[in-house]
Amino acid sequence: MELWAIIPELILAGIALALVPVAGWARGRWQAVPGMVAAFGFLAAIVMTARMLSWTMPFPIFEGTYAIDGFSTVFKLILELGGLITVLVAQSYFRKHPAHAHAPIAILLSTLGGIGLTSALDLGMIVLFLQLLSLASYLLVALVRGDKLGNEATMKYFIYAATALAIMAYGLTFLYGLTGSLELRAIGAALPAADPVWVFVAFALFLIGYAFEITVVPFHFWAPDVYAGATAPIAGYLSVVPKVAAFAGLVRICLLALPGGLANWPTVIAILAVATMCLGNLAALRQTRLKRLLAYSSIAQAGYLLMAVAVADRVPAAWSAIAYYLAAYLFMNLGAFVVIAQIERGTGTDHIANLRGLGRSAPWPAAVLVLSLLSLAGIPPLAGFLGKIFLLTATIDGGLLWLAIIGIINMTVALYYYIAPAAQIYFPVPDRQLHLARGFGYQLSLALTLLGTLFLGILPAPIMTITRHVGELLR
Image (cartoon, rainbow, N blue to C red; front, side, top):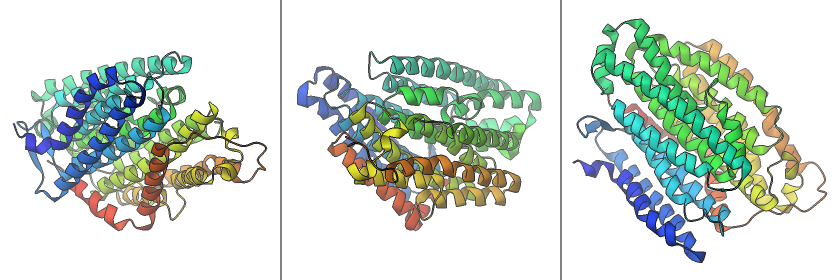
């Protein structure tokens, strides 16, 4: 059965299933047990996944339907870190809340779906893991029952996701019909002989599913409303984990099933990158609430990453650039959402005006929020700066200088809406005391995200050594 190759997946799946009955009867202080167990599960999965980096890779398992390679291993580490930080934040955010015991289970299952997507080599497996990722994400958004915004966000998320994934599954059936195979490498070998028109139709249809998860224009409409309606820890989770998994899945399917730029996918991706970064940045300029601001920021960040995806077929360095930036994005984006979770839980709102005086009343969370925003803006020496340099360098090496120039213009525009909240934190004279929610989960998450943001920017060599493993792609 080759189960030895999927120990991290088995750890997460086993813990999630074991916690289902526990969460059902947990009351009082026992509600914290599922979160603690889930956190240790993520730690164990991270250790076992990191151990795989030393293996001789790549190789397929389960009759060629699942890849064990450096490409998937690096992205799995990012996903597991995202799940761990989210569980820690949720432990403090949902304390004494009915969802306290249930949130870790949904986080485990959703992360498991993302992990599977990074390794899937079979069309059926891709659909299966995308459904697992999405269904558990619906549950996360719906955790707070009776909240009107949360219920509305859940319905929008469900309807948009179900439609996008159904269209994607239909597109994948075209690949099977054109080649007679479900396996990505066999599809890539047979597809060049197929009718180019139908190849493009198949690509356009299955791209919709990935574009939805990545929040690519014009499939981004759900993100601002869902982020605003969901609780802050879950909004942060949705902004990172599904996006990382979808980027890994998109790169794998394009490189394996559409070799040589079939269906002209690099050009399509480049055009989507322009539309995504431009709309995300322009819309973010008008936001007055933190979660909606970071929703549009997340859309713009997806546009930057798509620049490297557009050249991934001819610039191998683009793979490590994508992995490095996604690791940096995880720390700096989740760092911002941890502070937003504290503000939302303490004040009941995420309005930017609530940041006034934060630097004096809560200097430690204020510093993390400011550094996270500056890193998202690409200010040196933080992680976001090096990440953007790597993305732009890969894009230029791929011959898309025009796309890099558009990216630089957008990064310059984004400086305003990232720096404006920082000005609210420090410059105005505080007219009241801002009360933030407290908890060990918040403090540990703030420390992890801040260390990640600083470490990746100041000492990038160890992380770059790890991200180079993404070149070990099973072909």
